[in-house]
Length: 67
Image (tube, rainbow, N blue to C red; front, side):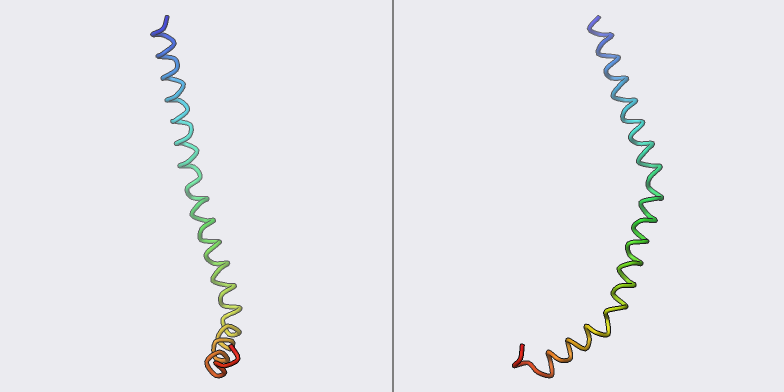
């Protein structure tokens, strides 16, 4: 009886691991798309503020006593 419970618990754990692995593998392409989307959003925002940041940096170098 104890042996059967042990075997059933092992089978339940293995089925859980298998289900988790299948879900993880299924979400990998979505994860890659999300990372690429985040990267492109950050790049776009950086391009938008680049000129103003360069202007601020030039002001810091031009007028160092104000800083």
